[in-house]
Image: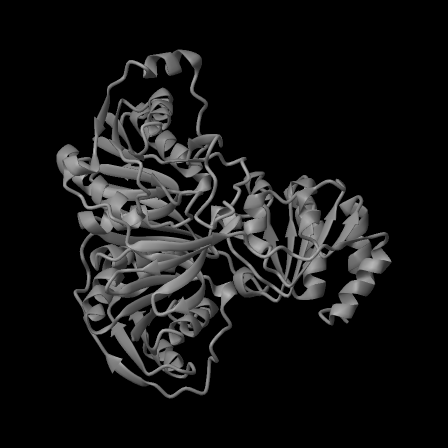
Length: 309
Length: 249
């Protein structure tokens, strides 16, 4: 089987989630990568160094900048004549593009896979992670999005794939990128961080969130996450949300502070290796998944913990 | 301008799903069902656009069992003008849903489509993107703000790391994220009024769409449980455990 993996990048660096998608694709067969964008020679060169990759298809056209799905899907569909499977990381951009490719190929996509059980069989999480379904595709081709936290990252270096230039239908004239407001942070990416410190509604305010959570995260070199309640209350921006409809994380250590543990939140973090919960309510569901719990006032506990580490 | 808002009847957000012992799926017998929460946000956005005068008519569509009428009545009570129910007891996958919606669109010729970004049962996050593809129209997924500007719509999208804005030529497909709005509760008078709003019943065959599933569900299981943890009695004990893990010095 020949698989084409869409490479997520910001015109400078390749996003880590792509490396997990490469690992998933390698379980299906030969892996080629698609690097689409404007001025992507460096990204294509970096993609060619990813271990286990046969070829990199580089499509350099302003139409493919900003991962506009109308244009990128048109390109991918044209290239899919030579491939049996299309994979993308289940990131915001991957989830935007892949179903468009699937529909144009008349394929039912398998979303957010957790494992590859065979050439046509995969597992995926449903009902906010309350169940895991094993599904078998009967389509001629596969279109798949890959949950990054469920697959190891392919090595970013050591490969020597050939880079081929490709072109496609270009601008479909349907959509225009207007602008973006992307937060710059020195902290690791939430989705791929080794340690995540998350805060919930119990923090009470944006000021308290930052004064309690940030020093602990700084001490641990951790990414900062949040429950939906904390995001809805405006303590932190939307993209901090961990959960069913936010980010899915599986760090080595997840520290949940003042988070009760609704099923939708647990869906986003219960595959962490070690979970620590700090909450004033001993009955909070978060303690049901925590390896280590501490019941008490987070405003006393967390600064003490930060000082002791 | 006309807006089409597809809505799905799903297990209620607050119910914890239980996996059937035979591994065939999740037990939905005698379980409270509601409108998919993201679809409520989609309905709210469409109704708000009409209240602002940007939209003349809001049509709600559902594909599902006869009981999905209740879901459509909720949409009508929130302010949709009329509804279409495509009745089937089969599990309909996102690709088939998108094909049925495309067939409805061919008849209704909407200018805008607003969907929830994902259904909380199958968590697929596909239907809006697939509908846009089949229509050959642009898509603004995971929307946190929507503004109709002339013959285009500007959609602010929730992306990894922040927000992004795209400008789409109408007709366009939008999928709603959590922060787009806070859906209203239907008032009792509006619930009464909704009972007399038109609700057309159709079948997939009426549209000539093949809804046979492409994915066979081989098994549905509960995820492996986490081993029980321990509740510690002091900050010192927790600090010691974290040091044991080797993540902190």
